[in-house]
Each structure stands twice: as C-alpha cells, then as structure tokens.
Length: 379
Image (cartoon, rainbow, N blue to C red; front, side, top):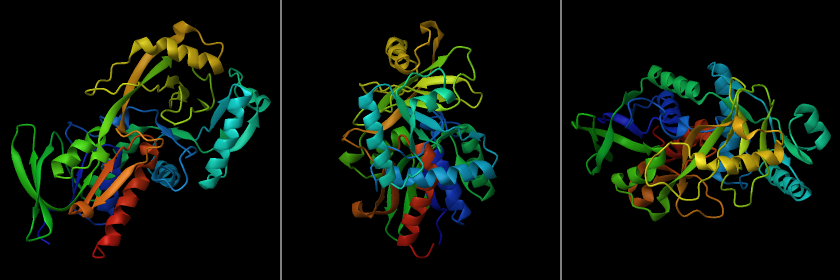
C-alpha cells in the first residue's frame, strides 16, 4: 500500500502510547501526533497513579472488562520493564453499619464481574494493620497498587520508538478527508510554526483525552454522545509524615459513583496524599490550580476515618481533570467506537477515558487492535 502510515494515533498520553506500542509491535507503521512538546502532560500525569482492582464497575461494561484485563497486563509490564510499582492492597472502610452493608453489596457486584479476591475484614484486623484508622470494618482488595505513570509512559514511548513508530510533537490535526481512490485518509497536520503537512494514513485512533470530543468533530464525526466536560479533582498532601499508612484507604463510595470519595493514596516514596474530590461545576478550560477553599471539606471527610489528623498538616498538592461524558448517566462507560457506521471505517474514537483509564491502558490498546484486525483480516 502507498500510505505514509498504517495508522495515525492522536495524543501521546498513556492510551495513545500504549496503542502506538501495541500496533507497532504488530508491524504496523504508526505516526503519533501530540499537541504538547512531550508525552503525557495531560490526564495521564495528573491522577492518583493507582492500579485499580476493578471493584465497582457493572459486569460486562468496558470499564470492568478492560480494568480487570488491564491490571493483569500492567503488573506484568511493570515487572518486565522495570517500571516502579508497589502492590500495596487497599482497604475500603466503613465508618458505620450502613456503610458496612454497602460493602457487602460492593463485594457481591465485584464477584459477578469475576473479581474473586475481595474479602470482608473486621475492625480488629484493619486496626492491626492500620492503627490510625477509625472504622467498623472494611473490604480488603489485595491486587490494588500504585505505579509511576511517568515511568510507564516512558517505557511505552521507548518501546514504540524501538518498533519503529514515529512521533511528532507540537502538532495537531487540521483536517481529514477520505481518499476515494485508496480507502485511506488524507490528513493535514499543523506544527508549531503553523506549517501544514499532508499525509495519507489507513486509519486513525483518537486518544486525545480531554480534547477527544473536539478531535472527533474535527475528523468529521459529529456525535452528541461524545460531548465531554472537564471535571476537576483536587489533591491535598499530608505534611511531613511518611509511612503513616501501609495500604491505600478508601471510604465507601457514594451511590452514582461520580467519585470514589476523598481517599488516602500513597506515593512511591510512601508520602501520603488525599484526593481527588469532584468539583460539581465543569471548567471552561484547563486549569490545574488547587482550589484551596476545598480544604475544609477535605478535612471533614478525612477526619471521619483518620480522626487524629491536624488541620494544619493538610497542604494543597495538585489537581487533575476528568474527561467526563457530558450526558452524565447513572454510570458512564468508556466509549471506544469504530466509526464505520458514520462512514469513517478504521477510525476509532476513545471518548470519556477517565478512571480507570490508566489501569486499563494496555487492555484498551489490545482491544482497539483486535477490533481493527477482526475487521481487516489483512492485518
């Protein structure tokens, strides 16, 4: 074929990098374009860096399937590629009997999805492990962990380069036109000097994170369901105290699952971070300032399960933004859609890739590849 590349991948966050690595490993010629000047500056580097177990998602949802598969792939990848990670385990803790009952429902849901290793644990057992916690009991998840998202992205980037993928930074797509003669797409790419280059590609994978809906629009796929909104989450850090917790500690999530509550995450240096919260109003544009007025709410939420916390020990840490589907249903699943029905065959849009997107990233790449190769037996 006379294409310049088999696939154009838009976005060099963790999903774009995983896709580039997987496709190029399977002998496809890949170009990745990224609007920033380096990999992973957006959603992928502003999160809790948790390897999620897959506890809360409805059975058969993409979030459930890709989180469970992604977790297995991710631990294996981290081991094989020397990416820093710790399988710490986590406690979801109940601070009253109603919450404890909810934990039983959560455990039953997880079982349905094939997650068998969760166990209900007594207050006594949790206190032996985590003496600073107040609770009436909890749910233990042994396979939850943390990793360095940065090292993960670096390893994917270098592997993709090794397999021959090309990367263009400071670049974005201007326009996409179907080439009627070749079944390919003529794509105009603009670089930082506003120079426009035209290439021909066999297909496109849109992994543009916060801007995935706008990119789909620019490609020519106009779908109301793809509209995303920016939902900010703030983090506060605990001053000074290291080694305070051995496990990740999560409160029982509220119904509707629009956030998992202000939880304790631990970084690879064993420092303690709390977050993220969920700001109700969506942002007009990207803004990563920590909203310090949230400190009182954080303090109240944390004090419920960590009673000895001092107000002055909470410091603003960082903020992230979720690319949340604007429709905001009871449960928002990932949208990973091959667009033949919109007459864009071999164009795949990844929309609403919020949590557990990092955990699912390697599985999303595999899923997209399988989606395409089952259609094009030639791959």
